[in-house]
Structure formats: C-alpha cells, structure tokens
Picture (cartoon, rainbow, N blue to C red):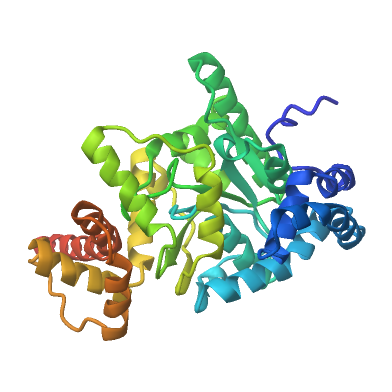
Length: 391
C-alpha cells in the first residue's frame, strides 16, 4: 500500500533504527557533541575527538528501536535543559481533559522549538501520550536536523512551495494527515499562526484554521462538523523572559524602518539554540477547554474563541507591569492604564536587559513585553462595558 504521507509524516518505528545509525555517523552531530562537551578545546583537538564522539553516540543509542524509546531517551535531557533554563514550570488544565482522547492543541507561538517541547514535556510529565508536532520546512534545511525532528514526532508543513496549485495540494494533504492522525489516536500540536508572535500579540490566523478544515470537503462536511471532529483545544504558553527578545525587537524595528528584513543563513538555528538554552524565568503552560459547536461556526468565530481563551489564561507577570511602567515614564504611552506596584527586582533586571539598545529597539522591546498585559486589560474592559450595556 502506498504511503501518501511519506514525505511529511514523522518516522515510523520500523524506520527508527536505520535513522539512528545514520545520525550517529553524521559529522555535524559529532561536531556538535564535542563542542558541547568540550567547548574550551582548540578546534584541531576537537576534530581528533570526532571518532570517539561517534562511538559514544552509537553506544548511548544502541537500545533505541522505536519512537517512544527515542523520546524516553530524550526526556532526561529535556528535563535537565528546562531545569537549567527556567525557574519554575506551571502546567494547568489537563485535569479537565481525558488522556484517552486525541486533541488538536492550538497554541500561541513564542519560540520555534521550545513551544512544542513544552507541550510534550507537560503531557509526558502528566503520563499522557506525546503529540505529533507541526513544523515548517524552513527549519528542516539540514538533513540531520530533519531526521532528529521527524524522530521526535514532527511532521512537515511545506511553506516554501510557490506554485499556487501545488501549494493547495500540499495543504489538502497536510489537513488530511492531521485528521487521520487524530482519528488514529494521536494528538496534534500546531501554532495559531505561521511564525512567532514577535510583537507579543497573540492572534489566531484564520488561514491556519481554514487549512485544518480542508479535509472535510471530500467528506461533505461543513466547517463546524470538521472542526468538531478534530476536538480543538487552545493552549497558552508564557515565558517570563524571552531569550530572543532583543533579536525579535531588532527585526521588527528593521522591518518598520526599511520595509524588509533578510535573515542570515543560520539565523533560525541560532534562534532555536538560544530559545532552548536561554534563561526564561517562570513558564506557564495552560490547557484550555474544547471549543463548542457554537464557537466553531466559522473560521472567524473559532479564531475569536481561541484568542479569548488565550487572554483569559494569560498570567499577569511582573515584567509586563515593569515594561508598561517604563513605556509610560519614558514614552508617555498607554498612560490610561494603572501601573502601580512594580516589582523592584524584576524592574532592575529589565533595565539591565535594555542597556546599550538604541532608542527604537528599546521601545519595541518594552512594547512586546507589555503587550499581553495591555491585551488582557483591554479585553476585560470591553467585557465589562458589554455586560454593563446589557444590564
């Protein structure tokens, strides 16, 4: 039987051993291991250690024959990474859901690799099956990176396809794969939009939702029936501190000033590494409730319902208050909001983060940190005005 999803799906168990053997012989992976373990060694000595690194990798991965065993092998490293890069991880909401069901997790998008990592870390820690992960093909340019991601339940979203007809075919295949995965008991994670919310504003792109619903056309379903069958659940991911905050602010300022921004060849890779290893402070992962049929009446209604849940789950953090205070004091922005009671320790830390930044980047970074607070306050005020008018 032909495997119609072979070019986008994660690896199957029967493929794992062959991929592992290929990876342990990959020079790039050996280089990465030696550089990670012995960063102070000169380049010529690290080069001499490559055969030893290959032997070490083969020895440590000899027991891996399935996707689950690969993820179990990764789990202690992920736990250690999170312990080193975060102060605390708070996971909420899974107790209201069933581990026996598959869900379409739709989350906000702050970090390239850490967002889905946190979703699966939270599920694994709670004893749930891990999810399959949607990842753009722009991040899979290197074959070794692609192998590791597909071993770890990632499937490919082909964003680089230019031809409109071919792109539609790929989107239909992607939508069908997601639906098939859910029906076979595999939960799916996908971001609410293409690309990270570099400005701090979490807003669902209806194009993502319309792509998800494409699979229902061949089944004769309407949007509501298709999305109801996929059991979408909004998930909020919050980082107290964003390791990539300065880089994001610089990109946004460059786009605003010049109308474009050219990424360097290894920029995504550097962002992934910085996002994984950089200090994040406290992290909050909140699983919402399944969307109702009324909330799934259309892509616009669904996007609005997702955004509302994300705003309601949003935790007000001291860094947001501190950023808003500085915006008010230095730029006379958002002065209509009360920003008393700024945490002194957080405020000093934010000021150190701003040192050396030019005026525009400094303002942009503060706006990004303050954005979730401003969004939440605005939503609450609108809700109060609406309820007041009804009464």
